Image (cartoon, rainbow, N blue to C red; front, side, top):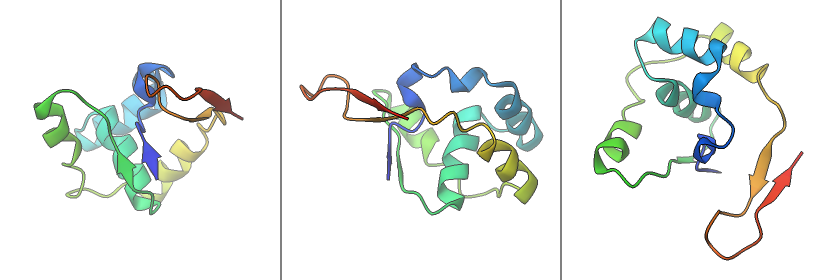
Length: 97
């Protein structure tokens, strides 16, 4: 399960050149590409947003499929910067490597 899979903006993944190129290829946003990548890997994504429009937009990832080459390119971006916890929930925010 991926909670806040876009990294709450802390990892700046929406500006990654590889993700931008893939997003342009599919005429999608980087967020769509990330959510689709997770979905194709069988990971349930729980994107966080305070905007109703973004929430509706975030679920619009089921009408395209990333190619195996694009999935491999995204897999190569892994920087092992996961985290456990949720900012603001009172629990410690712990980076995992």
